[in-house]
Length: 219
Image 1 (tube, rainbow, N blue to C red):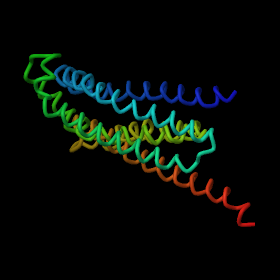
Image 2 (image 1 turned 180 degrees about the horizontal axis):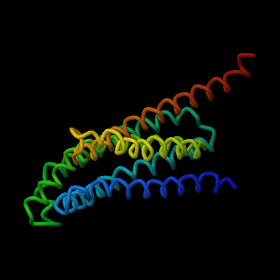
Image 3 (image 1 turned 90 degrees about the vertical axis):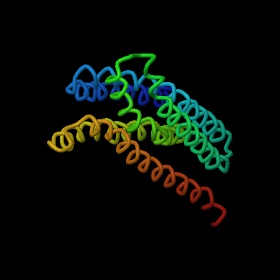
């Protein structure tokens, strides 16, 4: 039951993410084959950066859960801070390297200059600040490590999936903002907002846990 309580929400979150990406892809498709090809090529490059950042999500989850289970609560905050520091450095460094070498890397997928230019647009809007996604994921790992899985699922679905759909249904529909750049902006906006919610919730949990621990001794 404990395995299901942690695993099922994470799996359901992945399903909803996949469905929301279908809607986002449909918005990209509006701009034609060149933009679609450039978007796909850039997304493939970003996948390598994401895998590097995801390693710190997995590490944070493992270390936090180990220390939480062992009752070594004082280590958890330091683990999370180190995980965030590592993912920020990795995401920023690799994300910007992909942008710097973007023209050459995108040629692996296409020799069409227009496709490469379209791919560079996505890289500038997403890959350069991809560390924001890593920050969000590490906080998810920290929360799951201390036994919270349903809350991260709800926040991710609302903060990432639902908010992006609202963004596409509102901001993207404004004539002045009906462009591919607006679609790409939905990513960093939702990463920032969702990360802030995770951080606030994590801090609140840690403060509450510390108060409960000190209550008996104070009595």
